[in-house]
Image (cartoon, rainbow, N blue to C red; front, side, top):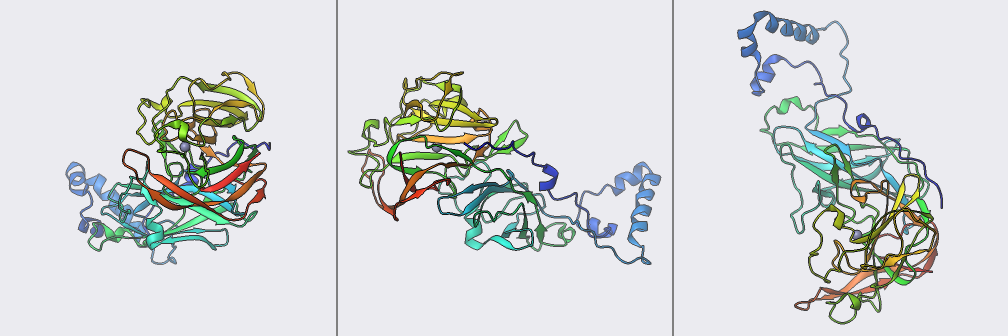
Length: 442
Ligand SMILES: [Zn+2]
């Protein structure tokens, strides 16, 4: 297991556009013509002196004609853009390094606006990722979570914020230390105060890429044919998308790298009609510790849910993981094992565990609609208010990638996909199994 350094503090100032000033001092007339809040009459009525002084100051700034014009580096913009986190790196089972973060884009102007492009740039200005048209629309989501079957986001309303899922893919060991952005947008021609906005392009934010290596761990399951569901870095996955505000103060991405493991047998996830947990091939598998560590929390009393049904026992934030174990495995790293069978967990809080030690049996408790193991690493003991951390497995066999071959719907039963696994099995060491890949563990 490789130790990792603590999270570098993300400098908020670094991620936000600097304080904005117009390109040159605005003649007062232009402000009035756009009907911005007009304080002048009020000020004039109260005190002629207070009114005269600002006019003189503005005028004196506006006419230094003898000096060459200095172009300020800053400008007024209609967007406020920040990032959810410093980009986190993981080496995927595709052999490429993935940088994961989301942009948060807020319309701070006077009319609905349309994003037209997002470019992620490297230190020399080279374009690492360009999103425009349908590719851009496919990455824009409501901030908290995408609404199922919602129309693509075409414009951002006044005061509205959207999240843009960013997955930058670069060759291994070529991830830059810092990345920048170029973002372009459009405003309708009748937008109030439009002349305040000199350019429809933003340079920034600049982000420092997290330099930590992914933690190397052992797999949390044994045996063959484990399908990585909802793993990184698919857009609109139940893990990749959620953005949660903590204490009204900051965003976290709690599940970016979390994986839901299901088990495939002859292209199917269960035998029979899929209405009983025991029919699922994953159900009852041993869940084992991915590293040495100390158990910090356990829950062992939640009932199994019904396959394919909305969970009934999830009443509060503490119920989502169902029966679970959280183990601290590093200075600021916690491993989370969720949705296990009631009464199956043999360890207790405070207990030391070792790599490979049994932690419970795979089940369908908590916020779960079929038997699976939800596993992730977090930078805090409470997964919901912490950031999901990348990880890689020391060794496993990558069997291939699953594709849906067909899906039948039987009334009263869960939708039943048949999956085909494409590819040639190979041994992987030190990579993260990307979404929909199939793994054999020892
Ligand atoms: Zn999950």
